[in-house]
Length: 347
Image 1 (cartoon, rainbow, N blue to C red):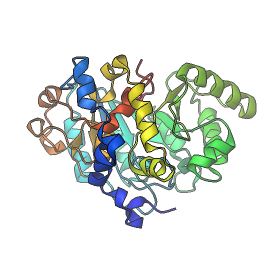
Image 2 (cartoon, helix red, strand yellow; image 1 turned 135 degrees about the vertical axis):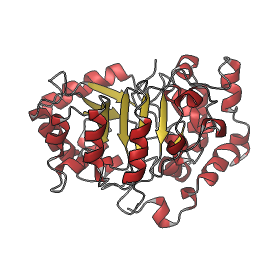
Image 3 (tube, one colour; image 1 turned 90 degrees about the vertical axis):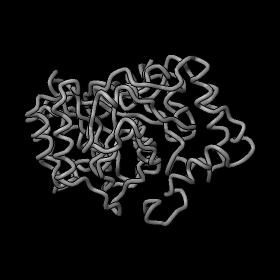
Image 4 (cartoon, one colour; image 1 turned 180 degrees about the vertical axis):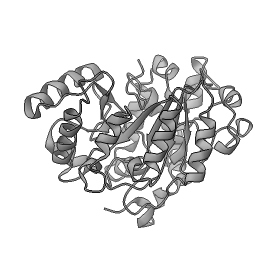
């Protein structure tokens, strides 16, 4: 399976994605605007509480091509953050108000400077989270990374759509489940999931056009089933809503589910979830150093407000903490039901 970009697919253009969400047909044209929705509860313009998390997308290259991927990542993507840009990120991290560095991709491990960067960030005393697809940890080239993670006390947050083989492979490709289980066992053997200093989290997102179930209930089910079937331990399960962009938007269009899914998100709008959206305490940095309010805005190429600075080379946390956050119709995905963020439900 190729990425949308490699296919030359129209949805690889973020402008077309936004156009579809706003005015694909009469039904979507009349969908309440997200800005109006948060105006009703006094949150417009949406502003940060205080940025504490520095999320860096170090590249769109990945060893997998998952059906739901909002990054449109894959082996054919070549965008990778350079060492020069990573050094600019390190300079920004001198600000003590930033406590956590969240590394994502693609497969972040495939950036050639990944290990060097993790070591530099840990020297600064920051917490490091790596968002791993798990399967990369079973390859020869990256098989020693679990030891590296444990040595530097990196928090590992892993994609695992479901605790059953069928549903996981359906979304992420044949053989994914077995490789994921193997990687989780390796991490468990190092103490991940049981040692308080080695946090291991799983991420669940729906396989189809529906909202995630209760995070608390699913975590209980995942823990019970993964331990019963494979003896696996982990700390937390994060439920994440699929946002209607990129490959998931393509799925919604191809399956005729887009309008119903948008209605579902709008009807499930939760003011409490809107108050806790991740863009209020996180800033997202793209592989080429541009700043975004979140990873989803990054994929839609909606940069941070001009007055706050738009590149990590001009990083100013005070300006960013005072900016207006940019929103559009996809933001309904983070405010539906119990809310959704890279750390799971927000309520």
